Length: 167
Image 1 (cartoon, rainbow, N blue to C red):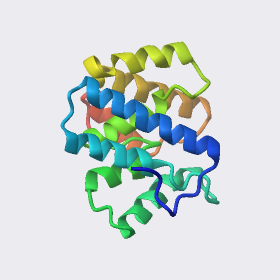
Image 2 (cartoon, rainbow, N blue to C red):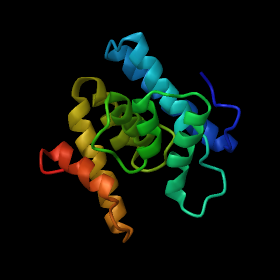
Image 3 (cartoon, helix red, strand yellow):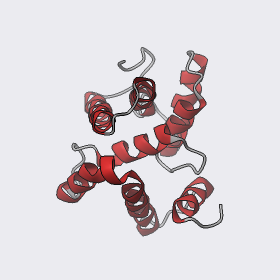
């Protein structure tokens, strides 16, 4: 799979998407993931930022917009669509596709912050996916709080699900 024809991405964004897909492919191999599930992960990877460089007033709108467009273009897998829709904020109702995309989007090697720490986390995913997922969610939430933004209710519910608390 590659980017859909309706994608609006810069070359840099395309590189990010390719690295996310490659990381998911590597993890799928290391985790002996069945081919059908691997294909779901890769569809989510290619769709997640397909409209990231389209003009939106709200930067968080690109995930929901890409999910809606993918649905109108024939993607009917609810897990793939929720992965794309919520990949920036987390979602308590995710299946493995959403969880894996959330991890790969944060841990892909082209990002320039904390490369050694993120590389170590990425290496742990096949053996400790849930532990790494909690760590990545914690880091993302800390960044949101440090930025002075409010936490979306989906993020709070996602964290509570990961931490074993109330949703």
